[in-house]
Image 1: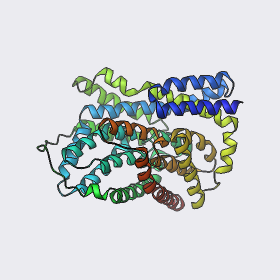
Image 2 (image 1 turned 60 degrees about the vertical axis):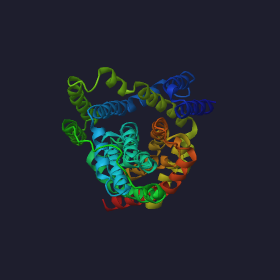
Image 3 (image 1 turned 90 degrees about the horizontal axis):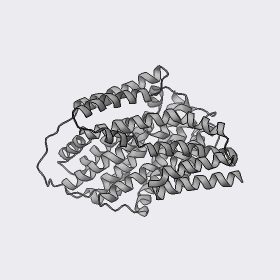
Image 4 (image 1 turned 120 degrees about the vertical axis):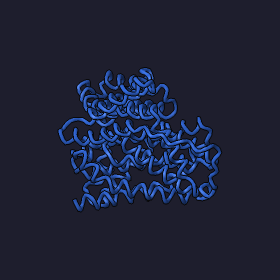
Length: 410
């Protein structure tokens, strides 16, 4: 009975997250309360789960604010001006610049910044150049997932895996650098092939060139914050402190110069989403403790050899497309952590690249769908999945092989 209730609660939470995100936090809170009150998960276990997730959620809040402040001071607008300027000899240079900027933004400011803040800039740039937006919009969609492999701070799933893997910030980045770079290169080649017809359209500037004004202070704060992540990790502190410091410094300056408002910064915190993440963790804990853990043990390969890592990543990718990648990583990490860091990072590759297959794979996909629909670009489920089916399997395999090479040589 407890398993049925827990699964029903998880289905309700995910259903609202996918179909009616406006109420996802309310439903998640209610579902978490239901599994606690009915005894599907004990109060102590629920408190332990929330306590474990709290530092991760705190970091996420700081990064969301930092990304919003970067947008307020014009960092993403400057990126759009740069992309328009470099596109003088065909769209391949535009696609390359979109890839480079998307990869950097995703790695440093998280995938949410790429989807919510960079994608509208990319769409506007495509309009300015009178070229089809689809290749470049799909680049931001795929890289918001794929390019989030590099740093512990790039994705909420990374933060969870970072805690489980027991690696330092720099060791994590060094291990994932080759899989990250290889995955991006595979995505670039395949998306160029898929959208070859769209990319053949010659760009035409419909507006005069705008002067490029780079917010140097904001860039400096971002780079110092990134350095702070490495320092706090070396000192055994949460990277949330570095993110908080960066957000405070840039926030105070942005408020003084009237680029930002207190209400805008508060809205960037996205408190309902933070509550959703915490409550989702409680519901997943209930499902795990009532039978899913035993079932998953039978599915997940044991060991850190190449075939085992490929199997682990494949299970993580498939599970992500069934229940979304956040519950998938919460389910799988406790099962693979005893195996070793390579197994944990294989899960991460699966839950980060795998969601490119379908919209439900990640919340970033759903955010991206909303952004492009509001801009007037159709992005049907069938088209998204067709593009994902062409890119995801090979990208996943290449990334896992690179992970195996790095961990074997290390």
